[in-house]
Image (cartoon, rainbow, N blue to C red; front, top):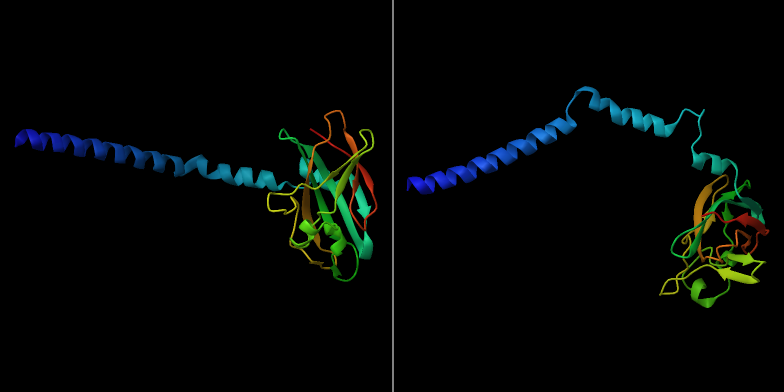
Length: 193
């Protein structure tokens, strides 16, 4: 019996040693001292003091294009990024510069039945490659839903809505395209990446 007791005792000691090590490791990671100050510093650094704007803040101040629409709507395109998967993702801000709430025009969804039946969206957006003489439409998933911001209908006065649209990418040597969205003026944008 003493041999069995010794084996059990060893197993118990191993479990206690591992548990104690884990406890000390956790206490050491979250302990006091200078470690407590690091999250505060990184959090305040990410907020910024206004003197050193981040790259995103710089992009918001200088959009690739500003397109005016109906009823005081303004679309500010902030980026058009090519990715490795063969897509271009266009990010923008849809603003209501008017004094009253605006119902977003249904025309922004385009006129394709498959997209329209999936609700209000920016499915009518296109990229036009004049050099390659091609037009690129917003991509759709296997259920016909557009790969763009959806589900919005009214924008209050002064309100901003962050939006995106995903397109097939034009050839790699095409870096400039014309962005078009129904009811908005067209604008030339640069594709990065």
